Length: 569
Image (cartoon, rainbow, N blue to C red):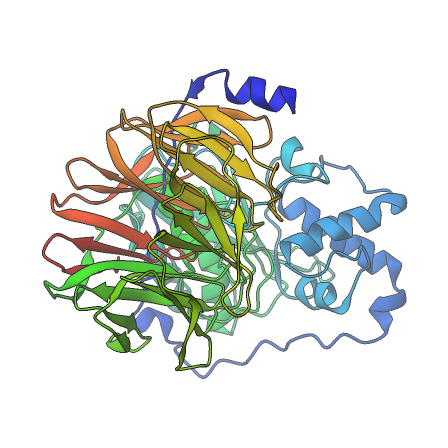
């Protein structure tokens, strides 16, 4: 712990990062198959795989290769297979038993991509963090007008249809990124990307692969080949389209995603579906947005603020969504049909908060009320009190900041609260909690203290003493602080040091899941790409007052005057 304090208080190490995302779905005739497609059958696991240790080992090795977790020609010893399986189960978000199970068999029996990234020693460690999102190759194109050319064609489909399907697959990416991709003229000396078909052997289970050759930081024009395995039948244009979209993602600089629903996940069904927000985040982090646009979803001068409830679970909660509080006390929810529904209308309501499938409201008299998923009745969970300043919800907890400087935590039943004693005299200014319920507290003098669940009276630790600290935010387990000079500083919780990731005049910081947003003094809104040194502007308007988002990358913005906007592309 002495090392923790020494490093945390040692000072700030500069650097930068950023990213955007949108939830727009690709639309157009290119997504509609030209004929009724033959469904790709989902393998039905039999008892055979349970005893076939060679198949289990082969699948585990293929999964490791897909993420660069193995050196070329290396093998995982049988004694280490349970640890390797746990690593895979962590990605698949299933219990980490270390036992090869039916879910793993089902996933890894699907069509797969044979693209193998370079060995990544940090990711290969058994205890690596395995952030569940897109992965980048590193290199990218140093120009944005790209060309491609067919080297040969498969005999399974007419050549014209293959050209049409590949053109449509490229369009899936160019609709969301500021790049153009066209087929190279026949007289052009070369193309940036080549499309080809090649026999890989009837026993090979790889549907396609993309080789990635780079010169320094840029992909090498003319040396990027997308290769389809011509031993498979490509007369299902749905499977052809999906495979092409996946491989083109590689050709643009994306590696394999750890999000199972993403286009860039290495195993796939072959169904045509929209580019996943994770895929969008990846390509945006490389090339930026094509043209970020916002759609106004409400306009009311009585709008006081918005919050976003976003479950940490991969399954969305019933109460998840965007909520608005108006100065009249009315609470509204933005439903899936794109309209606002009134949740409550009490003129005494002055604050709303929510997390973990619960919505809370605070009244002027200090009473606090709770709405449970599936219920339409608000239940009072705190008596009237002049001591209440603010409520804050995170993970499965609800906290209260009090005028006497203490913090209280709701017990979960009745109107019982537990006080968490302050470690020093200055009162609490802001609370933030991680998914694992580690509670952070920004004090009035700029000190940062934290306490790990279950928050014992002597559990507070002073982790930073800096009078320039003015705000804090947590996304998942990642902690950020905003300083009075406009810098956003991230805490590296592995090496325990502070790192400046934004120094462009930020006035507010918001984090959710793996996404971080910054609003500048000029009103512009930016998102951290995750690529060092790069933040991407989502909006440049001067009247932005706040931004919120969910864990899938959707973003909403409120501006002065009460208008609320959603980022749509």
